[in-house]
Image 1 (cartoon, one colour):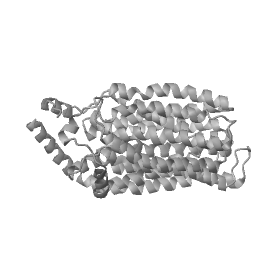
Image 2 (cartoon, rainbow, N blue to C red):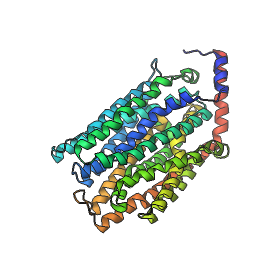
Image 3 (cartoon, rainbow, N blue to C red):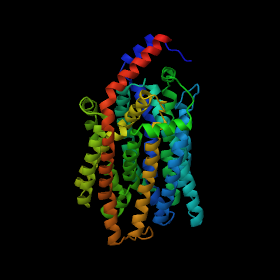
Image 4 (cartoon, rainbow, N blue to C red):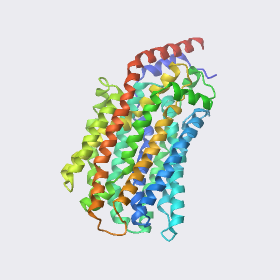
Length: 463
């Protein structure tokens, strides 16, 4: 069994600062994954307008892949919870970022000359590899890695979530702003798409490996909590006894339905009339950064779940403004600012909810299952993303959208507006309702933390 000097444990627990290098290191992979998500969001318009695939078919392929993706979350979480290497529990899986980017390149390198059937099979397979295999393992290793890198300290994890989230947001803004501009210049042909993807994929792949090389895991938590091999029945018991894991399903599912739709490319192409202006809207995220610096202060007054739920309601207001904006850029900018600020608590603090659930598992006598506590959230996030993409494709198809013409019917334009505003607004409100289920866990948090602190102090004395 691993032993750790108790003096060093107290020293680490007392030290609440994280350090700039460690914060940047932790954010590096998150930046890479966020950028990949943004770029994959353009897959629909690439398939419909460049590969000339029917929107309904593409949406259905993505939905089918996401349903499979939800199954692989269970397997990935189980694998990570049973991982024990010299590198740690979650850290080895950081290399999956290489697979994410290679398969993304393969997606956008789909030959136009292939038949529709071959295109459909290729898109389905590569999309599944990106999300069902590589991204799934990255998400499954996130919480165990974070807990062991930051001493299972909720305050440290919140800080790295907020400040790392700021860096991730900045990286995401850079990609969100620059990609539509570069897309307008380069993505006018299949070869242009290839050049565009190479410009982003290669440097972002290198950036994505930063976390592995900079951040190490501390195995003390496994020793103190009594590491044992996890059986599948342990996961089933957790799903039965830890009801809070089910709340993550609704929270992550509804959020990713909203993100998965990504109707902005269609909105700015056909409603605003200039896809290049989409970068202007994305750039507004920079103005949201000073607001997010207030979050550490707000956390002294509100719990993580309260901030996420409140943020979702705020974001819903931003989406509502989109419906009335039309081509009005100032109103679109205001909506983007409000919706962006509202989503930041979820993006930066959701890991804290996973830590709370893992602590609750240990408190009620279960295995911690640091990865598996998030399996329902991860599974429904993938399914939600697939449903969002499927809704985009299916509803556009029902409305009569055609990628072969530059002029769309009035029905298609109305549908694009709804997919950009009202439907996401409803999704954010449903997400807020799901998060309220964590309020009961907040009420027990002090008692849980005190009990686990006493348990670990007893372990130090015995060792």
